[in-house]
Length: 90
Image (tube, rainbow, N blue to C red; front, top):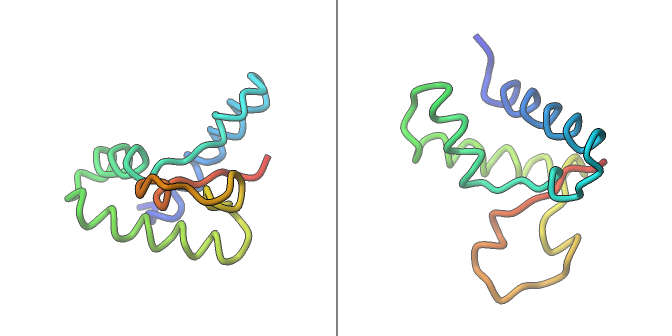
């Protein structure tokens, strides 16, 4: 069985492939809510549990420079949900 991180890697590979064919920068956008819904459906797990794991993994990747936080790309935002938005490097 794949770990959650491996499933995220596969999904991110798909997003990068989509971006390479469309050149749409929003194909590199990662929303925690969307990713949680997708992974929870795949694993048939509780969304609250998956959300904690996804957020932790995304923060770890952001600290290591593997994904970018919204604030790093677009600057600070007054919208609270921007804390759950990330971008993949191209």
